[in-house]
Image (cartoon, rainbow, N blue to C red; front, side, top):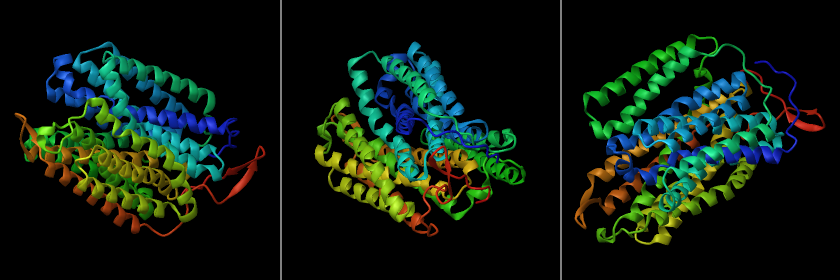
Amino acid sequence: MTAPAPAAAPEHPRFAVGVLAFCGVVVAIMQTIVVPLLPHIPELTGATPAAASWLVTVTLLTGAVFTPVLGRVGDMYGKRRVLVASLGVLVVGSALCAVSSQIGVLIAGRALQGAAIAVVPLGISILRDELPPERVLSAVALMSSTMGIGAAVGLPVAAVVIENFEWHTMFWVSGAIGLLDILLVLRFVPESPLRSRGRFDAPGALGLTAALVCLLLAVTQGGGWGWASARTLGLFAAAVVIALVWGAYELRVRTPMVDLRVSARPTVLLTNIAALLIGFAFYANSLVTAQMVQEPKATGYGLGASLVVSGLCLLPGGVTMVALSPVSARISAKHGPKTSLALAAGIIAVGYVVRYFTSHSLWLIIAGATVVAAGTAIAYSALPALVMSGVPVSETGAANGLNTLMRSVGQAFCSATVAAVLANMTFLAAGRQAPTLGAYQLVFLIASGAALLALAVTLCLPAGRAGTGTVGRKRRSSGRTRALPIQEGA
């Protein structure tokens, strides 16, 4: 790693944190913004329901692929530069969706929007590099929580737009906000001077991409193709084989795409496993809440709520996540991020127990969903702090990208699990097939189980209170206390 003299701290560090958090919320909203629109896509575009489902699937695929890759590129060539490029990709994707009703163009645009999720780990890396040590935990907590905040805000915002405006409007708005993000980043966010040495590992990036695409295609499409079909099993097998070959290559290359030796450290490995489980547990809350309250009253448990009302059920959770991110930072600073993550997993599990017993009251459903969101806020704040405590500063972008990837993989498995449960536990209500109440309750039990597994994994983490991986050695630079970078192998 080269270590040139640190750049001057941002003139308005509060603005830098706020701008990066705003960017994170925007790209996270892109993950869920089309969900309320999906039932209407076949009518609006002439596409089949299977083709319409790709508007969500493709963002998951591109987000999973590009997040670790762009994190590594940012470490090597400049984090702000790559972040701005990612926002530019979001703008282009939004424009494609805004000007067309052809399903192929819409899928291409959504693919570009999904790739922009790399903004979140890049923003975390910039904050680690640029802020004084005492501010890193709180800023990183807020930045990491934007993934959950955006998911909670995206559904009600999209529902309001769809019910009151022409559906292309939400893509025009997302493109305009993306442009605003770029301008704000260029004005208030500095470029980090920290770089990692070596050439970009193109074969490693291609191998990781191939393995992820095979795995996520099998997970997201297996329900429709059949879990025992040759296509699904072939993709799973291909993912395993490619991953083994890729891993062997990464262990030999001098500057790997993913440093597997660092990733195998107990702190990093167990944190990534916990991230997968937390991603699974959190996503169930987003997937089933709106659908459940929209079920007709004839089901015996549904509330027959409108699209807007069902989306608004998640909004208190989004507000709670904003409020709790600094609280999580204080817990991590005082007791360590391991304690924060364990507490978060326990809260998520409790939230799903509340949801299991309160499926007939709108306000109690909102309360249960908000408890889950509260636990998610604390977890998403603690995860990057744990990752950064176990990796060199030159690999922050790639390491946080990998952690974000694990959350996405957890969400993919959750989506497949929820779809399978709701599709196989049905009954006839008001002349149509609907999931039984037991199906939703089973989803809550599975999600609570995932949270408890995350708790168990967290308790196995090595003891320690290192929170940012940068705190400990300081020096004065331009009148401001600065963190010295951790040396390679720290």
